Length: 283
Ligand code: AG3
Image (cartoon, rainbow, N blue to C red; front, side, top):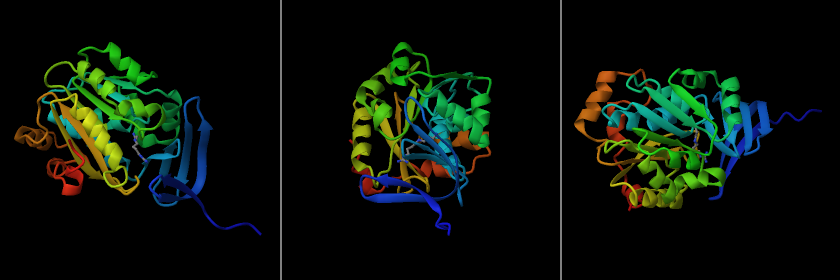
């Protein structure tokens, strides 16, 4: 008799919490030189990309994360021309960024070439970003690359995994100091994925302390990302002066009228409204 019980992919949190997806088929699995990569077909949420046992995205909800990481900072800048995406080898952040016509040059610095190759093969909806002619893909350690980039970028987006292993350096003050000097002028902006304010409170606190020590203005903004642990997610935004909540930012979002499904002027405004239990994590 065959065992008819379905397979599940489970992400297990240190906090004693599990997130599970029913798997119809495992499409790809490999150990790259840097990490363990898995692609599963889930029963209800499309394909699932996992790096080192950490859910990166599902086809059903990746638009929320990628729209919020890209559009909140890119609309805050009045005229972003040069963009650096750190990590983000799957191409989702690039796809959203590429919708900004002012961008002339987009550099993706993704340490693991296999992530890009696997995403290209299994996630067709992410490909447009990887194929945009303005995009240059570098497979390097971003913590090193950024040191050589004095005053090179208008906006830097950190599309990393959790602060463990090779991504840990991307959450530290040293990295933010290098990132700050890589910003072209006083309109420079950095945004980063910022973990769950419910499950990873200490990491959120440390991220904002490190960012706040380097940048004059920092914010936390939130989004609902159902397929990440707890579904309650945050992003960090740091600027040398610009304000993501300024009226002209909302006007730019309305005027661009991008065909987005989560980010819009109202959501942009609301994302910065914080409950006290999140505000207390900030310096
Ligand atoms: N970046 C991953 C965010 C962290 C998810 N954390 C987790 N599942 N514990 C996603 C990269 C998508 N471009």
